[in-house]
Image 1 (cartoon, rainbow, N blue to C red):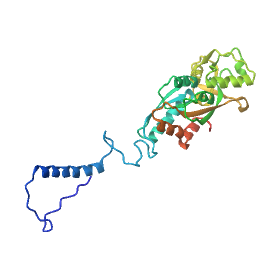
Image 2 (cartoon, one colour; image 1 turned 90 degrees about the horizontal axis):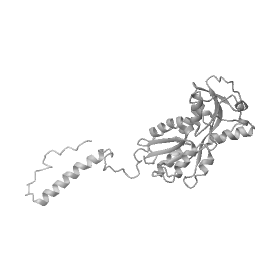
Image 3 (cartoon, rainbow, N blue to C red; image 1 turned 180 degrees about the vertical axis):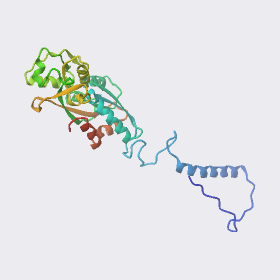
Image 4 (cartoon, rainbow, N blue to C red; image 1 turned 90 degrees about the vertical axis):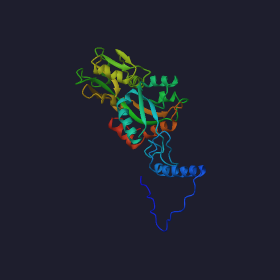
Length: 290
C-alpha cells in the first residue's frame, strides 16, 4: 500500500488564517480523515476477515475461477471407489481451494439405505444403475462416470490353479461372493447363472472390499471382485481375467442429493467427475470409459 505525500508549502499553497474550530468542524475533519485512511486499506484488503465482501462479478473464494462457491461436501460412494476417489478428492480440492470433500464408502445397497434415512450428504455414486434408479425421488439426474468388469481374485501365485469361472464350482474350493443385493454380488450371480455354474460360497459379504479382504487374509481361495479392486492389492492377490463374452459390465452413475445444503457445489463436483482430469485418474486406476 502506498501513501500520497502531503504537498509542500509554497506561494501556490499559502497558509490560510485558521478559524476557530467548533464542534461541527472537528467532527467533519475527523470523518474526512477516517475516510481517507480507510480508502487505501480497502484497496489493499485480503477479504478474508469476517466482514470482508467480494466484488460483484468476482469468483467466489475457493472456486479457482469456476464461479462455484467453496463448500464442504460429503459424498457417499461405492466401496470399489475407495482408492481412486481418495486420489480424485485430493485433486478436486487442489483445483478448488477452500473446498473440503469427505467420502463415506460402503456397498451401494447400504448407501441407498442411508439416503432413504436422510443421511446428511451432498452427492452419491453407486456401482450400478439399478440402485441409483431406485432413488429417483432423492437425487438429481445421474451421469455414468465409469465402467468396470469382474475378475476372479485368488491368493498370490494362484496356488489352486484357478483358470476360469467353471473352476469355482469345485467343492474343495473356499469361494466367497458378495451378497445378491450388492451390485458386485448381483453381477457375479448373473455371469455364473449364464454359464450354468453352481457355486456354494463359504460366505456372502456386504461389499466388494470385504470379498477381497477374505481372499487377502487366506480365508477364501477365490472370490469375484471388480478388476480395479484386485489391482489395489497386486502383491497379495492374483487376478484371473474373465472373457468379455462371459463377463458383466458395471456402470457407475453419480448424482447430487436433493437434501444437499450445497446444491451448486455438489453439482459442480458431479460434473467434474466427467472432466478430462477426473477421467484420467479413473483410467489410471483401471476403470473403463463411461
